[in-house]
Length: 113
Image (cartoon, rainbow, N blue to C red; front, side, top):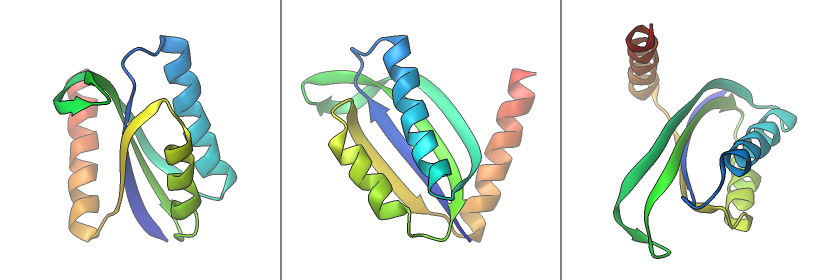
């Protein structure tokens, strides 16, 4: 099993309901194709470093999941088809990145508590 991480930016003009629907759509796509969700984070509305589609901000989300790898190409095709998604990036994590992601998750859990 390979470990992957996807960060995607949603259009800032979307309502909370539309954002939830979009996030749920991509999460369900992964689960239905045999991926196991490790973590899911909502980073909220953030200012972009440069304008994308004449927008200066966007809603950031992060998915961390494991899969054999066949799901990544169709998963990215779904991102390209969805007009609500402004940008996305999926990367395969090595052992050092996996350890760093675990540290980040535990740090976020202790900060929220």
